[in-house]
Image 1 (cartoon, rainbow, N blue to C red):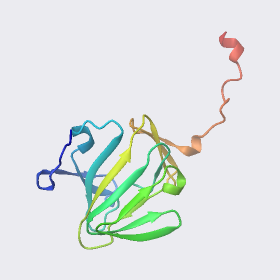
Image 2 (image 1 turned 60 degrees about the horizontal axis):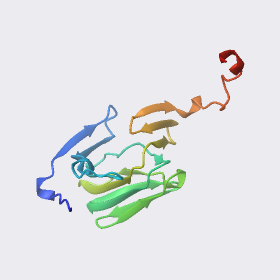
Image 3 (image 1 turned 120 degrees about the vertical axis):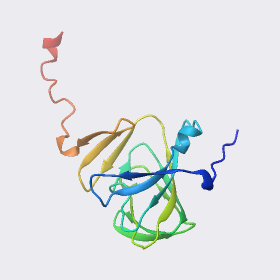
Image 4 (image 1 turned 90 degrees about the vertical axis):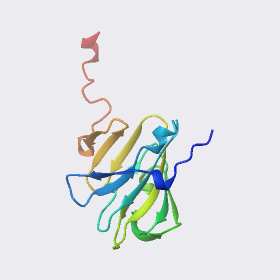
Length: 159
């Protein structure tokens, strides 16, 4: 069965973080309305001077943006690129797929955000050294990384 989402009937909510620069408008969770099992998708838009999510990459999810209107700057590893209406950009899993958007213009930029979902995902934020366990949104600092066997020295005492 096909499910059609009409642009004229989409409603958007403002997502404002405690840091004013991180702000975007997002549609209802279209993927939930469609009862999608392996994709999350929303239409989002960035107002002028705003950033999307913090610079990040996914360990178990591919992501795709389709620029529906406007222009935006894309940050990827070692490069900044301008994306325009009609552009499609694909992000691989892992550090090479790190990305962030910034609306450097005076007009809103609307885009479709599509992400694969296969169970748990780990999202990493290179700028701030955080790790996010999705979908639970459990966020940890990666500096707390420990050896696999840390704390296991007294295994015999537990038997």
